[in-house]
Image 1 (tube, rainbow, N blue to C red):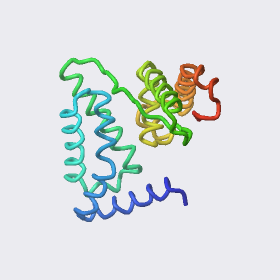
Image 2: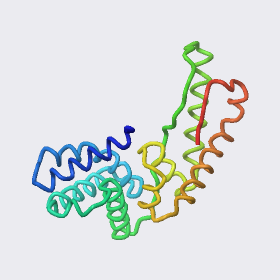
Image 3: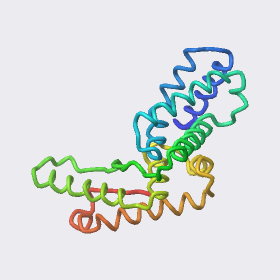
Image 4: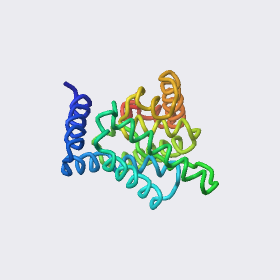
Amino acid sequence: MSDKENNIFSLLILQKKVAEGDTKAFRQIFDLLFINLTKFSFSFVQSQEASTEIVDELFVQLWTKREKIMDIVDLRVYLYTASKNASLNYIAKRAKQIQLEPYDQIQVQMADNNSPEQMMIDKEILHKIRMAIDQLPPRCKLIFKLVREDGLKYSEVAAILNLSIKTIDNQIVIAVSRIKEAVQTVLETDKNRIYIKK
């Protein structure tokens, strides 16, 4: 069983315990998902305070309606979707436009050589990657963040954003292609130092 399958199985066990009123199991679910859900909400509302309140309220509702928690097929997808809807409602009430939180992380494998020259090149690569990600179209950037940072499956992101899996795949291809293009000059200088995988 993969780590992903283990996590899903563990979440189902916790979900069942919450249905029985287990506060410790509820706290475990909260600790497991709260940070990523808050970051996801922040990508819409652009307010740390608002995103925290939104996700806090989701968990309050989840506990209040805990007797129905086993009706939820995939709790993680359910909470991401609820977070998205609550965030969009927040924006609508305040008539604000959606802006996305800059995403500045990506899987990068750097060489162990810590020479000043090597460190300078590493810094340049990371800077180019951050800039490339920040310049992605909003939807593309959001999908890239959910897949790469939050570790969601394409099918889960598709369910959360009401898109097809093919659309998710296409957006990831676009994101990776633009990132590669942005750092191409550095890659050509030292091709064995960075790997960006689809």
